[in-house]
Image 1 (cartoon, rainbow, N blue to C red):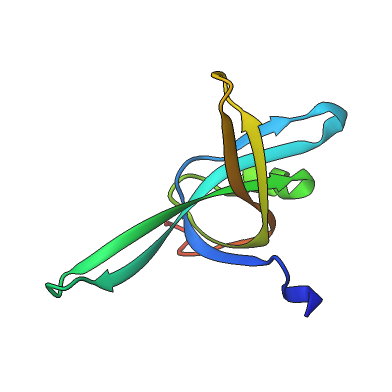
Image 2 (cartoon, one colour):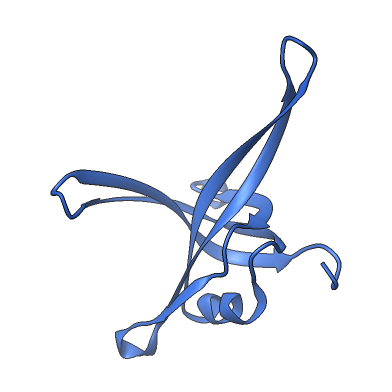
Length: 113
């Protein structure tokens, strides 16, 4: 059961080109967002689309691959783990962020997509 603890699987589309940074020590960090859609029918029988946005982080070699392969609008399947953190904004207010630390990804869709 240890293999299924804190594991996330998503299929969605990139909402932006990945933002990639070179950090001290030569390590890379990539940040991007992925949109997933869920559908349901309301009381009137109308189909409603609900979009959720997920913040994704990739480190090291994974960040290098993200930088080379992923662009806004591409469909991707990814696997990672949830990570939560907090910080103080410029006004001194405490903010909370939940991100997915990517372990693997696969580009989906057609080559001309």
